[in-house]
Image 1 (cartoon, rainbow over the protein chains, first blue to last red):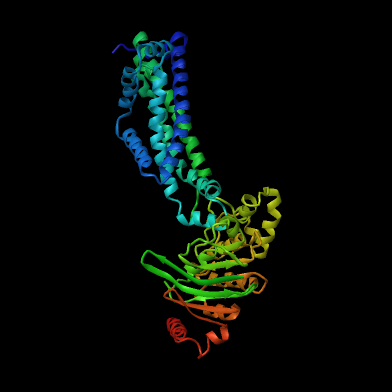
Image 2 (image 1 turned 90 degrees about the horizontal axis):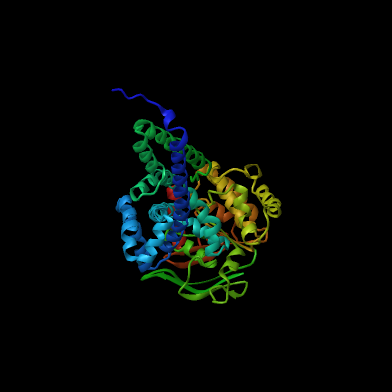
Length: 232
Length: 243
């Protein structure tokens, strides 16, 4: 084997710029999908908490689809499937502005919302009903009891699971490469093909993924301890 | 202060309160006792509308509390309620639990509410645990905090539903001591209890319930005498056999 490792090839110039651009796209995917996913998750949790069968069923169906179909397929459904139903004019426009990332954000956010809403729901369910009763006995309204007593406990109970979902989402952004989003793993493959520095390209990208994953894990363990709810 | 007029309540086919009529005079202490499942807890829970009733009328200070025009949250903020299981809020410190009603119902800031809450904690002997979390205090302390929380809005009525039943025996005394201090201090007190010695000592009236009926309503002297209702004498002797 005459392969000589040379990381300097991919750690400077055009190749390094491509990797940095990929990292930037990965972070955009991660942050926007996370925020949208969280907002939608809260909405789904509220809808499912309201005692009305049809809407509860819709939320349950939404959750089951996103939890039981591979994320890659969910990405394909949006990128290839949804595009078919749009008029050509719209599609041409979307392709011009680089719609892949938009589809990827939609697919990832919907997927995360399904998981996060289940985490919120289990957080809510693990609060003893007596807490609501005690809050109401004080004279708080239903919404007041939710706001001051139930939700502050629910998010603490859901926090470890939500942080776990955050890490999964971060790594999951790499699947967007499957529909051509030029994020970090997509760029790694491109750099490797252009430079023939296969090990180096994937080595650098692996190190970047690990660094950020460890940061998320560290922050998760800090936050989980800080906001742990101790119930006797 | 509180009047029950032919109050009945049922869960489906099961009748849990059976045509109860009785009066609680202002400032007096009522102890409710009787076998489990007799409807004591259900009855006291109807007073702040934690339980709806199917027929009859309950008036507090002359007002029909189950009337549509009554704001249930307003009613409850004027009636302190203490649960068997304390039900402190685990995400809040002791002092934050006590001042929650001041802040969220009276709209006071933390700064405004703090002195009142600390005074109340001193009254129950727990000022030094103000910054503790409920998970870090004993059951007896937790119940005293719950009582402090229920008194913070200066209610005219305090209802306690078996306040010492979930406590270890060595902690019962500290809670009873506090209730002894409250009783006769102007507040109208209704307390469901199995502590018969305590009931005899502090009650103005003792109510005996059996199968959803108020079988006997008497002064402590009469309640513990040979002239008491046969059901009461049977209940008391069954308790003594167990001790």
